[in-house]
Length: 299
Figure 1 (cartoon, one colour):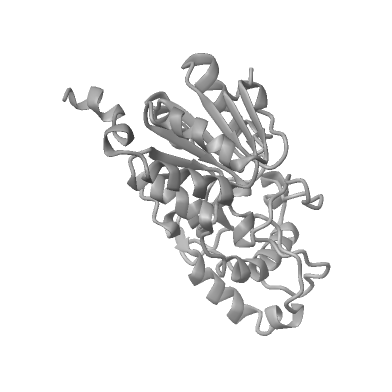
Figure 2: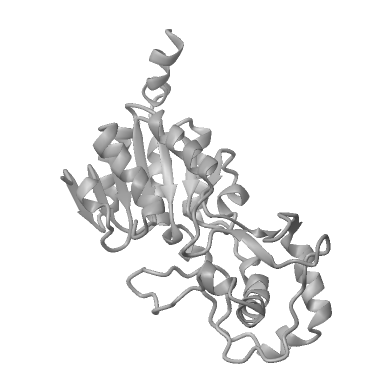
């Protein structure tokens, strides 16, 4: 049962959230709403257009689907790399430096948490900046593949033009991909795929287990910018409340699938709320800010 709900009232929410964080170290779980202020759209926000991302079974169905994916991704990735961390990313990095947030589990693939300075990040769904071969598992940096695709398809990006809509996973919305040439693995000639978890694909087991261990060792779970629609994120909320009985705080614009498990629910933007929270925690006395370390050190 949600104990406190703040519909867009940031300042009134920060004090209660700060009090909860003062009682122990938190783990953050972030979703696409974290990156909307960086210009990367989400799938399920209140103003998001309806999109149907490619599934892993569709991608593996043959060269036609792979051509469609890589043409769209080649155009969209160039724009995605121009995104920079926003106030929400920087605030979480500040909270980590303050020892308030121990680590961040993110459903995003954009790498913006690391770019903002967060050191302890689990990329639950992988990173779009890496590529893997489905046949031999060889890895390649994405920028290397981008150069190969540009050489195979000279002028393609320029012909598309700058006004194309881009999806959260970096895909540009293209009506025509005719003639686009895809690149094969240089090691085995196999099928290349971005090293991210597609819809219908399982998150690697060891990654999930590491994330569970982080939640198990936390005193609070802070969810930011996730609708928790898919189980890959919701399972951590359910574990925190139903098995561990630790507080769950949810910051998101609009309702989430995990609202029934929230101790505090803040209907607001991640950048605004997290910036206020980081400033609030930074202004607390040292004795209050690090009180949870006393029991750990025995001091």
